Length: 256
Image (cartoon, rainbow, N blue to C red):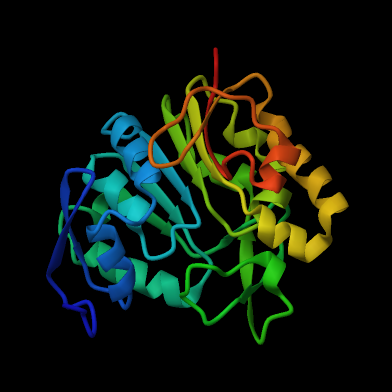
């Protein structure tokens, strides 16, 4: 039966954890319950994140991945720049009494450079698709930036860092500046690329260069495409990603 609104106290099972949601995304959570939302992402988090982990969620939205990581015992830093999504994220954290103490919420836009960042929404704020590549949309807003160097200070000397990056095309400008966050001995990155948004915004030729630069910091890392399951190791190839012949989501692991 469809839900008119997610009611306080709706409990779901995510990666084996009971999690309560209290936001305005009933259709999304229906998909989660039915196993139709990013099963590969959930599988990676279930396998990789636990009490030993610092989980840095870049593009936290209303918190599905932060909620999973916090429920697994990880220390979490959730970064979200969409004010509507941010309010819903805070409600979801508050609905889970044990979790807010594990989560630091950062109401900034992660960016390679400091200053103001303009974002736009394809449909409306809170729709999970706000992006720096949509500033020509009818709905836009500005957010203060937080840089990878700033985030590295918040992370501190985490021995086991897991970074999820899903910022709807903003990853192409961000990735070349990630060095301060990638310096630790054990770092994993769950990177969602958005080649269609990029190609529509800058054209195919420029898109190829940007995908290439975004993947460059992970040269020599272990790489597995993420789908319904974590795939076999592969080498990400920018043209194949742009053409849809390779996955647009990758688990990248630093090889010491």
